[in-house]
Image (cartoon, rainbow, N blue to C red; front, side):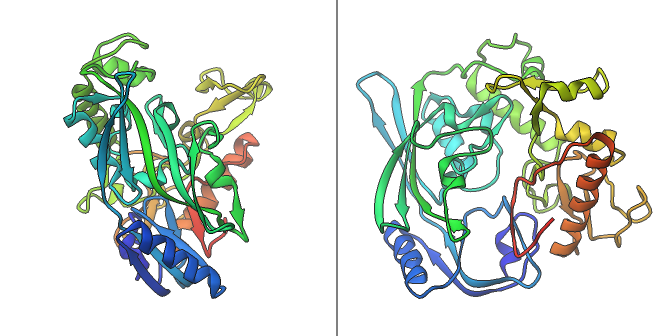
Length: 353
């Protein structure tokens, strides 16, 4: 069952499951499925997937490649190369053990390293595009291996060319290896997130001890159920289910004055807090548990996290349909209350909101 390969712990079987432990195996598995006309589902850490209860009618390929390497650069910086299947948090930890800084604010994010450039993974004021030098990918259209540098990846908020470009609904590019250009430094990258700066007792824009930043980020994430723990149902989720909406600044006129909003590069646009919108629309922490919020599912199935309104969690016996039911209710409620349509962050396989 594919549910055993995901952090939400839902999903039926695949027609075929292949585990690729090398780049050659990964490329060959994808090429073989493509040549036979079968659908392909790539699974890394399974932290950004919700798979239908019926499963996947094609070839599911689990990316289990390994390898971390350091290349000293003439500039004095260090290139950290990581195989796509390496655990992301293990990659961050390795960088710090090696005396490198730049990734510490991204500690605790579940999933594989190769998935991080796909949607420009980010948290606490940092995202991978700030440190990523290049990604080496297998191009399914040309059957060639390419190296895409930072500018070619066309990073945006939770977006990249890898995510946008698809072939018949499935990814065109399969990430094989990624590389990050990091400083050999005990101090962190500048702290850009107010909550993290407060916890570290520094001003926004200042630096702090990189190991302390990692420890503090992990503590913050645990309080929100955002570090996967088999014993904690609040972490049995895809993390943030909805992205923070980027809207015309004029929308602020119809929102309460205390509505959190943040600047973005696009002129005349602002980013809102999806968690705030969800809560203010009447969907509090734990919404969906039996007898709460006016939308009831059986105890032990699905609910919003009891620690954070952005996560939809499996309380132990949930089906994919339960997860999607919560998401539909929340999305409809936010749209009715604020006229804003939330967009799901995880990939839905065989499911629609």
